View 1 (cartoon, one colour):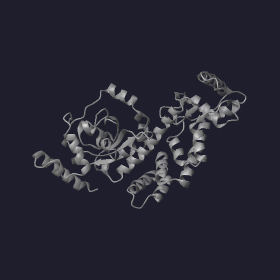
View 2 (cartoon, helix red, strand yellow):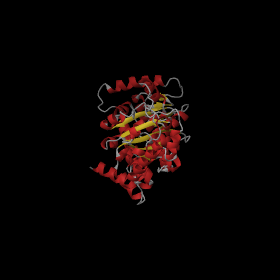
View 3 (cartoon, helix red, strand yellow):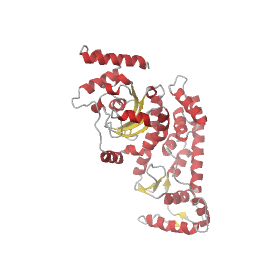
View 4 (tube, helix red, strand yellow):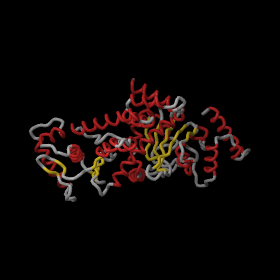
Length: 402
């Protein structure tokens, strides 16, 4: 895309529009931008500056939005690189309200001056043409250069945005946006956003999976808000115990379970374990089938966990399902030796499977998730020579390898 030519044409379009010498069909604009201007100018309720939520309303909107489950994905995959490039990452809901904005602090200060901040509505019906609003309106990834924005006070900003869909229904639930200088519309920007959205939509499948199994014995180990048993919150320690026992169906004696749970076991560890088991049994008491036997400690019912389902998907050769089941490390806050070992085993097994039979997109997804330059290099070999993503992948590999 020749952004210099697009900017020149957009400035000419503003001159013609201001002088009333041309109708919209005659303006020298890209079609997607012209149609956005048309929709924007036909809306009498529109303002050039966005409406803002109060702090309390913003907090409530975040709590109620399913996007809260995936904001950590964008924080990990996009925000560090955006900060280094003096850019901002924004996550908007389906109405265009920016629920989260993060990135370079200097860029954030400048953007806040024109209302680009958390709580502001940047939907097309609110502020006219912008990448997040246009992505929501069209359902496609878009890029908007400075003067292509309808209002002059944001002509110093460039932006790229990609819509986010609920992977179960296909419904658009929001958009992720990259805003700032020229790097925001660089050739690699859209592929970067699209890769991050693919990872985020995979994460959304897991809460849906937990909801589907709310009446079953399913332990979700990757939920962004902490472990859940049949949809209900569970403490980290109790999740560790259940995960370890589910991985050892024949059971473990007291000393073995202590070794699996405690980084530095001491004489008091077995007593601490017994106390935790008492509390865990009480937490499970509402379901009489959920019993933990002693001597050895073992589960007396079949408990499905994220890990057991991951192993099943891998045994069946369903790599895409395995990647959907494992969008993040299991029990990421746990340092229990047994959990660390299971986490490592899962990562290595999935990595080897992706290296052996993964597509370029699958290699990219896991490579970015785990910051693995070998996976990214393998993806680079699979990408077509004319793929616009190649330059971005090369840059990512160089950054990881120092």
